Image 1: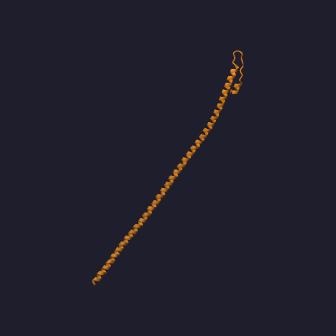
Image 2: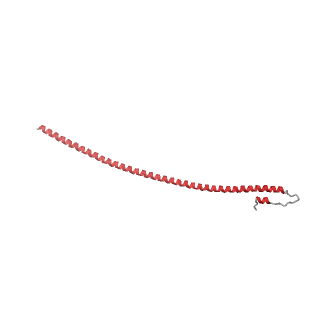
Amino acid sequence: MKISPLDIQQQQFRVKTFRGLDPEDVDAFLQSVAGEMEGLLRENSEMKELQARHSREMLDMAEKERELRETLLSAQRVIEEMKANARKEAELIVSEAELKGERIVADAERQLGGLKSRIEEVRRQKIQFEMSFKGLLESFSHQLSGEEQS
């Protein structure tokens, strides 16, 4: 059974002539109790409203927290993907650099082989020239010695 402040204010008691309660005291007390009850009901209503607002705020905060966690996880995934892509790109660059280096070394070795061949050719031509020149000198020397004998 719910009792409202109005019920308390309108409550009537039978008056007994023999040692009964003073009706003014009873009415004053009932007015005081009704006022207190009205204040408590108002406070209870405010508390329920405050609790409902706090519940909504908590739900909003929980939603924001969930969104923040999702954003953080998404950012972590993007960072990991970027790291993986950077790692792959670095490996590709290193691979290309190694390949280019191998080509440069192969070209240098080929050029070195060509230079060695040319040096050998020049040496061979020098030896051939020296032999031809010696032969020519000997021929002139024989001619000179033969002319002196005659």
